[in-house]
Each structure stands twice: as structure tokens, then as C-alpha cells.
Length: 244
Image (cartoon, rainbow, N blue to C red):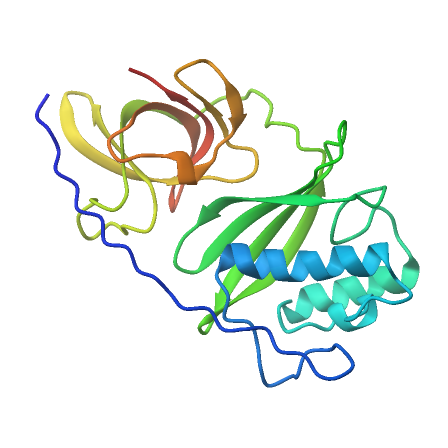
């Protein structure tokens, strides 16, 4: 097989600091320009502290539900949940307050991203599936779904192919910000399809280890077998198995 020369351009975006007023609330005109991971880390770190120390934490939960880091619809939903005292916690998605939390980015393109937030406590499989959208030049938390972290069940697949992963080296008109599968079908080589990942996408390593797909561990031209569902935007990956 011919060697593939890949040139990856890395864009480094400077982050702006999250500003607060004297009482610990957001200043209003100043909003987060952090990247996806830092946006989640900032908001969830403050929320966890406020849940752990409700009497003294600043900003408080009442302030955080009004944060510009949240979309208007999500903010309204969290305000209602806060008033009703629903469980599990609508942001952490945990029945018990965790000592620490972990975040893992599942997917990111130019305008949308998905991050999993889980407890570091042993024996806990509850998780928050967090969707972010790009609003102007800032990331905003648009939705939070609570789940038990189970993988999607087996079902009929509408897309099953084996090929090579490409991202940074993918030519136009495809976006080099998303992973694609280049594959052969019916004797025709060079077919390309965008890959869509979510919190239920399961990956199997060369060693046979199964886990939620971690996009930051993918490498250009890795060979993979894909099973999933065809959509208007590409293949929604249910299972990916790396092969030699």
C-alpha cells in the first residue's frame, strides 16, 4: 500500500476568561469564549461546588441556572427543575452528589459538540450527555440528557463498510473538522461518508477492548469497520471496530 502523506494544520484559539461580579454572578455583557472542554469544565465545576456547598458557594445554583453559558430553553428548564426539587440532579444527572466528576468529549464539529459528564465514584454508571452549540464565537450548553451509560442495543444496520479514517487530510468539499470513512463499494474505490458519533457509539480496539468511542484517540488512515445508520448528514456510528 502506498504511503499517505498527511499535513495537519492546527488552529490554536485563545480563550477569554469567565468574569464575575462582586457577588459571584456573571457580569452579563461578558460571556464565555472558552473551547468546548473548558466551557463544560467551567460550568460543571461551579455547579458541583454549588451542590456540595449550597450555603456558601459562589456563584450559587440560583445564579448558575441563569448563566449565559446555557441556552434560554435549557435555562428555563433548569429553573423549573430547581423549583420542583426533582432528582436526579438535572445537570449532574447523579442521584448522589459525587466527590469528583470527569468529562469526555465525544464529538465536535464547527457548530455542534457533545460531551459526557460522569461521576468518578466507583460503581456509578449514571451520566450526563451534554450537547453544545456554537452561538457567534462562543460555545453554549444547549441540552442535557441523563442516561445510565449503556450502549445502544443491537439492531439492523443501514450502513456497514470497512475502510480508512480521514479527517485533516480529507479534500473539499468534505469538512476537515470531522472524521470520514473512505471505502470501496461494488468495485468502486474512493467512496467517502462523514461519520457521526454520540454517547452510544461503541468502539473496539485492535486488542478487543470495547468502550465509548474517543475521537481524540483516532489517527489518520486507521483502518476500521463501521456499522450504523444512514442519515442525511452521514453515517451515525453504532459500532466501530479497528482492524489491521
